[in-house]
Image 1 (cartoon, one colour):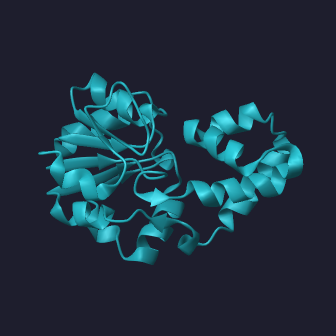
Image 2 (tube, rainbow, N blue to C red):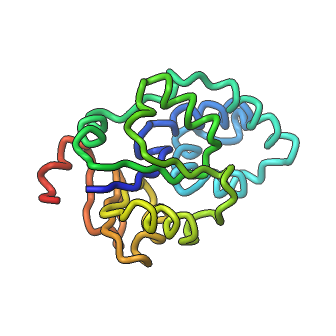
Image 3 (tube, helix red, strand yellow):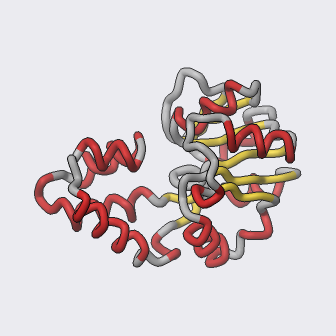
Length: 186
């Protein structure tokens, strides 16, 4: 099975670290649990929701760059699936440098045949452009993400979809914990 993975919130639990950064910038304007909810929709959504100024956006970016890879923990049991899959690829809006730093920290870079990041110039999700590229090159069987936004392009291409730790009407499969993956019968 060839799997296309989203990165943030799917392979790695990055949202707590991003919430911490937003909290540092927003201060008492927002509760951490509310920031987390907005980030789960999308980073851009959180910026718009809190009407973050350009100056504060620059501060957010600087603080994000200072986050250590160990603050981005892999989800439990995801490595078992990476080992099982025939091929794994990533499609993310994160920078290549950020993705590689985290993968290398955990020694996971060898699990991935291809990585498409925001640096590659493809249109942002839910556009299908990057998914078409990865599907044509790697014949993707399943796309896994934590947001509907991650699944829409796969659905448009006829690829099976799996939502992680969220509910989503368009998902073919839903997982709350990666231990459940092998019970899906894929």
